[in-house]
Image (cartoon, rainbow, N blue to C red):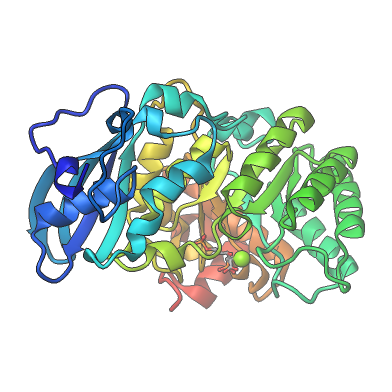
Length: 417
Ligand code: CAP
Ligand code: MG
């Protein structure tokens, strides 16, 4: 058993293979084929020295079976992994194979995991989402309109009173969901339990006032046992959602939370803070497309996937990722994509034209930065989304919604830099 045994371009992947596409730049002195063989070997059960094991371990060996054309960031190769290599239901084990040591091998100058094609057995060994985009009707009253969410800004430092006041104003103005920021957890200036209890109490009041269901994406990000305790607290207080910073918490932590949210009947909002450390460079790392795939298998209901070039953040392939999150995956529920980052009422129509309306729209600065405050900012965003649904231009809707007019006067229709 040596590196050359892990390359077979005549091999046709079968239904029981996990097929991964990588983009590689071979290391010095190696051909693409030689580098591809090393990727297959080191990510399954080979190593640098020739081995002669007694037992038939070849059944667990991956095969580099496709070599594509050379592109600006490297050459795309295909590697087929037999399902038997993997532990069913364990994302960390799968990732330790397909995104493990190979990321640091000398045999490749750069390597990026671009895409995965999942076999049924392995995909079915994961729970998948509990709700997916059904949250729009099962938990909220959004119907086929994009649910609107807002993060109180400044992102941390507000007291619980200030946080709840902002929540009330945003809900009253037409937002469906309050959302904690990715770095707001249980700090002294806004402690977790009081924040959750007071905000959900306010939620009940505003629901009575508006006749519309409202809810709260509560950030439970913490050490795993503590996340479980916080999820139970949210359920006890009558919440329906928890938010997890899935990259910083890690896949094991997420899988543990998903087990408990099934019992607690809570939907999971996935924030992807730190994703860009994996996916920003086109020639190296792990693509956001793959991170989203892992998250769907793990069972999140919503995940941030970007704003199709609009907004303040760099993103890759948002429409393609969103399409995969809605695609059939052996009966797993879809995942509701979240567009967030520098959004304001003046660019929402462009966003919905680019991504469709089966998304969640989050605006923080684009609501709380409104000259007339949070409630006006929320009214402006809601009006912008409803105008798009009615096929009416922002400018026309602004004639009857002064809050929208004010937002357009302030921010125009361009993305912030
Ligand atoms: C947006 C946000 C979100 C980012 C995350 C922020 O605030 O709260 O965390 O959108 O990025 O902290 O920047 P604004 P992504 O609405 O005020 O811009 O959605 O790309 O994962
Ligand atoms: Mg944030």
